[in-house]
Length: 153
Image (spheres, rainbow, N blue to C red):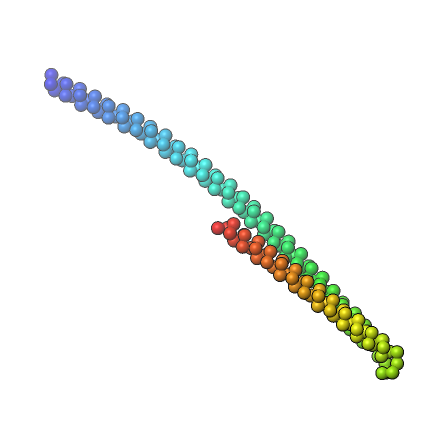
């Protein structure tokens, strides 16, 4: 009879251990499913964040490209204006081909020289303004570029 009791106790111990193992396995499976779900949610959030970053970066790049195009077209227009202005100033300063020192043409030439001086002063002033504007635009472009680099990190 002692053997029967020992066998029954052993069977009960094995059954208890099996039940406990099944319970722990169920808890582990539930824990693992929870981890998989949280990892999936984190991956989804990471994808959304990356998409937002790409959209933001694309917007910044588009704005920067547009600004560069605008600056290029403004520069081309200013160069064209400069060529036209030089031509007009040269034609105006040349005056009539035949002038003698004691004639009204000399007074006209002095007047042209004075006007040319004023035009050159205005051109210098305009060149300084354009240089300042170009520097401001360049600094804005550098700031945007730095922001894009920071956003990519």
